[in-house]
Image (spheres, rainbow, N blue to C red):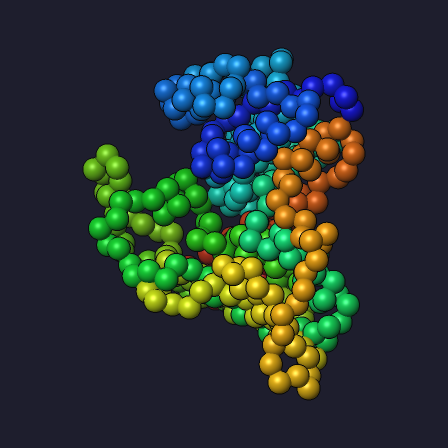
Amino acid sequence: MADSPIRVGFVGAGANSRLRHIPNFQALPGVELVAVANRTRESGARIADDYGFQRVEDDWRRVVEAPDIDAICIGTWPNMHRELTVAALGAGKHVLCEARMARNAAEGREMLAASRRAPHLVAQLVPSPVTLEFDSTLESMISGGYLGDILAVEVHAGQSSFVDATAPLHWRQDAGLSGNNILSMGIWYEAMMRWLGPAKRVTAMGATTVPRREDDHGNWHEVKVPDHMDILATLGGGGVAHLRFSSVTGLAPQTDLWIFGSEGTLRFEPESGRLTAGRRGDRELSEVPVPAERRTGWRVEEEFVNAIRGREEVARTTFEDGVRYMEFTDAVSRSAATGQTVDVADL
C-alpha cells in the first residue's frame, strides 16, 4: 500500500478520537475516513456530519468486515478492545487501538496473539502522551550515565481536588468497562518503561473512598476501582520506585517525576513541561534544554500510516509493550487485593 489510499473506519469516536485521531488522519495525504460506528446511530451521525465520514453504521461488525476499509481505529472503552482487535485483525484490517490496551493482561495477550497470527498487518496502541516530547532526552541522559546507577524513582500523579461523594459513576470507576486500570497509573508506567525498563515486583495498597456511586440512569453500583493507590516497585534495571496515583488529594502539589541516581538527580514537571537536573557537586537543579528537533511529540496517526506503507515500524506503542504495562496493572491489582508482594510477569 505504498501509494494507494488508506481507508479508515472508526469504532468508537470519543474525546481523543475527535481531538486527535480524526483531524490528524484528515491531515495526512492519501487517507480517507470511510465509516464510523459509535454507541448510538445518532452520535455516529453527528460524528459523520462533523468530520466528513462517508457513512454511519449501526453495528461495529459492518465497519470491521467492510471490504472498502483497510484500517480500524478503535476508540471505545477498554472492555471492547480485545473483541474488536481480534475481529479486525482476523478480517485483514490494520489496527490502531486506544489506550489502555485492555481490561487485563489476559485480554492483552489475546490481542498480541492475534497480531502475531497476522504479521503482515500493523497493530499499534495509542501511546502514553505525557512524556513524548521528552522521551529522547530522558532516555539518553539515563542510558548515557548522567545519573549514574538508578537508586530511586518518585512519581506523584493526580488531581489537586477533594473527593466528591455526589459525582455520578464515571466509566473509569466501572471495573466492567475499565478492568484493572487505575487512574493514570498505566499511562505513567508505560512512559517509565521507555527509559527505565519494566518492573520486577510490586507491593501496592489502594483505597476507594466512595464505595457506591449512582450512574446516569439512576442505578447504584459498587465501586471497585481505587481512587487512591500507592505502589512500591522493584525496577528491572535497579532501584526502587514509589508511585502514587490519586483523585482525592485536595490541594496536593502538581504532578511530578523524580529520578535519583548515584551521581545525579532529575525532575520532570509535566504541567509546565519543565525538565531540570543536577549532578554531584551542584547546589541546585538546572533547566535541561531540549532542542526542538528532539521534541518528537505526538505523531501517532502519521506513524500508523507510515507503518502501513512500509516506511517505518511502530515504536509508540507496540502490542508487546502494551502487554507489559497490562501485566504491571494486574500485578498491582493482585497485590492491593491480597496485601502481598507480587512478581510482574514478562512476555
